[in-house]
Length: 473
Image (cartoon, rainbow, N blue to C red):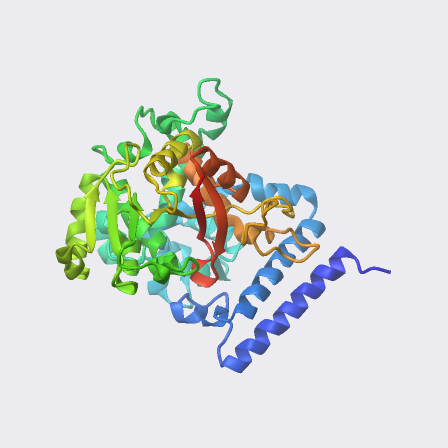
């Protein structure tokens, strides 16, 4: 008799835990306690490919067991009340509660004392903190006494409560950026989410691809795209936080990760790489250091290129002086001026734009491409929630189908891939754009004159971002 789904999932968990504990014992590292504070060093237990996969399998199995055993109304309530949790977390973050608890230490602090510091009603403090303690975000040490956990300490700005109260506008300056990212999601993301249903149903906007008709525009009453709105007077604090949040995202995806997969070193001195929509050229900077004979052209809007000059003159001035690296102002919706590129690089450009606009970007590159030009697209590829039998196509595109979880798990490992789907809806709510599946990318690039021939899927820090290699058609 075949084992039940529940038995299979239970065995996945026990086998995975055994793998994790054996590896940690061999390497002399510990699995951190949920009630300890987060430190980068505490993540050392993950730095073994076998452990990473075991963590994915065990976590996915635990979620699936909960989905099987929980009463359906409870499971539905977890999803339907997501905005309650978001509101509670935002209230605690914006009143410096994480920092207050950090200064209190592991024994925690009574809600009366917390209230004196965060200026919230102690009774409401207790309710807010108890709600999120139920999800391990905080810890109720004893009745009405709360402390940080590994999760909440991730949101610590690292500043003293005194400094935060004295200079609230500098809250995230100098911080790692993750707390800024979460507050951005809880604020601007909330503004977009609150109008998403209306935007989806309104005949004027339900099929719209215009960036100024994103759900957030309906909430704010703005008639301009998100990028323009956040730069307007009155949004200075949001703009500052957003910039720091993007630094946090960049830290989660090191520039060096772009160097894996595609063989950049196979390119010679006569080859030219054009980094399109490059920002200040963070990826190109890593590439220029790794491949010192490669010619690189960094393209973005004129204002961004002005910022890039200071960074490049500081980090790799010789490359600028020699002309090996050029910083070039360019609007990627207009004709591409470089007609002899060996490689066009698009890193996290297409996800900012709906399909119609993304195709225009791709078409401009195709018009400038030689028969031998390659296009490297770096994006988060959203996995299907089912087994994928089609994306490799008749030609068997290497890497098109990602590693899938063993049955009976969901092929995408379930909610542990939540950040990719969250990113997709962040793009929709704020910009009327999206992240895409591999099938969507194949169709999009074909419309733009390109064919995907290989997908490079990273591991570890590279796992969130994949590279698609395409050729002209």
